[in-house]
Length: 232
Image (cartoon, rainbow, N blue to C red; front, side, top):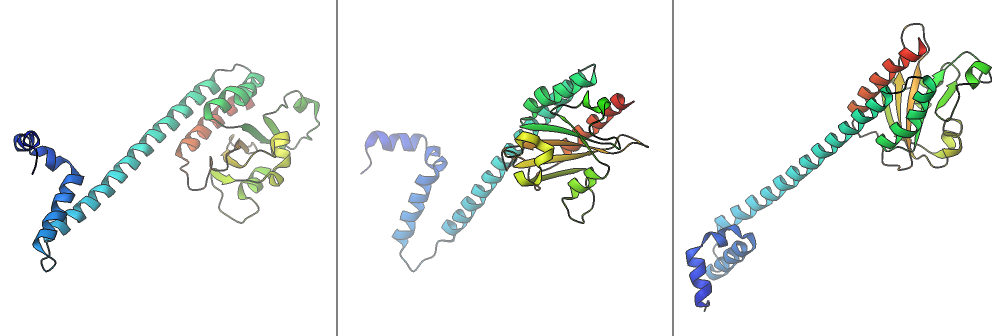
């Protein structure tokens, strides 16, 4: 027998039972046992299917919310990085900002700005501006590196995992730590050789081919327009 105070409470607030899925499932199972094995309760089967569908909907709902928060956080990161990139008044300060502030905001371990040039790398004019961020390469380097040695269509943004032996010169002494990279092709205008912005990360899963590239494409668009100002 049910205790009188519990019985009175259930009679006064029957919705408590309806809102508890475990209790309702136990009551339905008990009802099926009482009817016997020769009777099939379609209501119980329908409820099980509805519960299964509800669980899937809840999982999808949580996944959508998590993705929305992640996209919002990524958008805010890119916006902050763009504002930091627009602050410097000299090209040298611009490179320093990329290496420190922008890299920290985007949570990457390495930033490289690749510029193709027909001048030798030991040119005094270039040595004055070379640093940890700027990497001068021969013409054609950007297209070859983006393609990765394969005959594939040229994409503006490439996300992939990488191995240390593949990029010893580009990352310098950090080549042994970089496991994934984001590559953004830069168009500096007619009559100029292309460039490339490289974001390297120690986390092999930070940049994967399955990730979206819209935010990075927007960042690259702002970056190349900023670079046109310095190149002019």
